[in-house]
Structures are given as C-alpha cells and as structure tokens.
Image 1 (cartoon, rainbow, N blue to C red):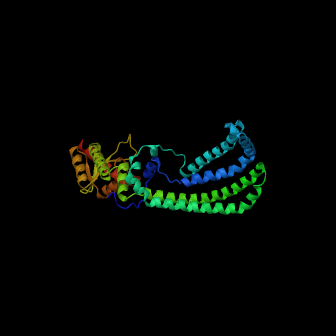
Image 2: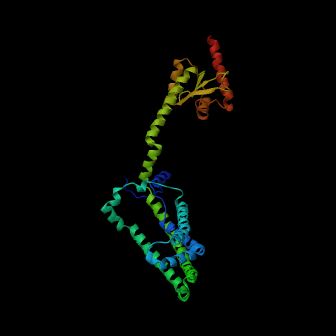
Image 3: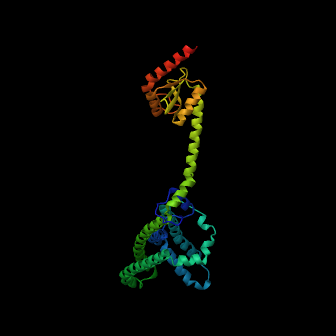
Length: 344
C-alpha cells in the first residue's frame, strides 16, 4: 500500500514538515546569477571611485618588489575596492534567497546523516536521472555563456589592442568598460537560465512532495484521528445524551406519541420558559423507552400522531417549540392540566 503511485498534491502539513527539514523549491543558479550581475553593475562605479588609486598603489608596489612588504596604500586601496563588492554580493544573496523561499533557516541539513556517506546511495545518486539533468544543465550553461563572452570580446578586441599601447593609468577605463560589457551580457543570460532552472526546480519539488492515497489517509488519521474511532466516540456521546434525555422524562408534563413509532416529552415552566420545551424524543425502540419511563414516573401519555411527528421533525432536544405548534401543544397541555385537577 505504501508503494502505490504518488498522484496526489502534497498537503499543507507535508509542505510544512519538508520546509522544517530545509526542503524547499530553490535554485542556486538564481543566487549565483544575481550576485554576478550585481558585481558587474557595481564594478564601474567602484573602479571609477578608487580604481586609479589602486592601480597607482600597485605600480608603486611593483617598483619596490624587492622589499617583500605590502604597502599600506595598496592594502587600503584594495580594501576600498573589495568592501563595496562584498557588501553588494552579501545583500544580493539575501534578497535572492528571500524571493525564492522567504526568510527561512533550518539546521536540519547540517545534522549528521549516514545516508550521505553511504557508497551505495552515492552511486545511485551519481547515475540518477537528477544527476543527468544537472550535468546537461551545466554543459548547456557553460556553452551558452562561453559563446556570449567570446562574441562580446570579439567585438572589443580591436579597441583593447589599440589601448594596450597607452600608458597604464589610461588603459584602466577601456578595460573596465570591456569587462563590463562582457559581464553584463553574461549576467543577463545567466539570469535567464537561472529563472528557467528555478521553474524546473519548483516542478521537481512538487513532484517529490506528491503523496499516495494511502499516505493521505494515514496523515488524516494522525491529524483528525481514526474515522472509525471518532465515529464510535460520537456514537457514545449521542448515547450518553439520549440517556440523559430519558432521565429528563420524569420532569416532563406530558409525552405526545404517534402512538407507537414516535414519542416526544414536553415540559413547560411559566417562570423560566417562554414556550414549552422538548426534553426527550425518540423513534422506534427509543420511543418505547420514553413511554416506559413516563409510565414509571406517572407522566401523562397523550396519543396525537400529527403533533408527535411535527415535534420530532422540527424541534431538537432542549429547544422550545416553534410558534406554529403553540395551538396544538396548548390544547394537549390544557387536557393534561384538566386531567390532573380531576384526579385531585
């Protein structure tokens, strides 16, 4: 039963449990492409702000290469270039991850798992369908990115060769511009491929979470309880309520019967009730119990088939009778009160 085909969508509980384990629909390509594109966009700004200072400090360091000591100017200029890039990469990674899975952290994947170092499992993963798909995606991504980078550099080759003859400080801007063009086109292409990969990861995630009908039934039992057990509990509660209503017959003023099939016990207290109230009702053998209880406590039994059927169908135990039955019930109660007075 547990091996039957998984054709049903995952339940919210299954999704929540998978999320707690760190299993979410996420593409690492989205993070990589977003970080790369952010660095490409930041690079011209950073180089315009501190590139020449870094290049000057680097040339000065080369002139003093024999000292084997990095100058403070080179160190601080390098940090000034790297700090904005690292900050942009960190923030971009957070935003890209939050857009895919929200603000979520799970320590479950960090816990030791012997299955991860199991050679048999590793061999199966190595030659699985998922590994084949990942390899195909990697080859396709490498081929497309290499082609775009080569085409872009081919268009910039002539300009780069001409500026290579210029003094070093003046070659920085054209080289950065060429790198920016290559990086921008590669980044946009990578982002498109990453979005397609995210769609695939989401489809594969939904496929992995699918459940069989047997699993749905088992989860329903765990969350809602065994249906058979709940039915027995409900039946038991109904039985207790019926017994309680049978005990209330002793306090009734009259029992209206069909005379065999239905029996409804009524009670009326002018001080606490706006209208007569049904304290017990039954059909078949339950009606017989009500009649027996009425005989035991000397409660009047009045045969009135139309009224008994109407009371049974329209009024629940503990409810007052509707206005449409006031007249019929009043006649019955009047008869009972006359009967009581005649016996005194």
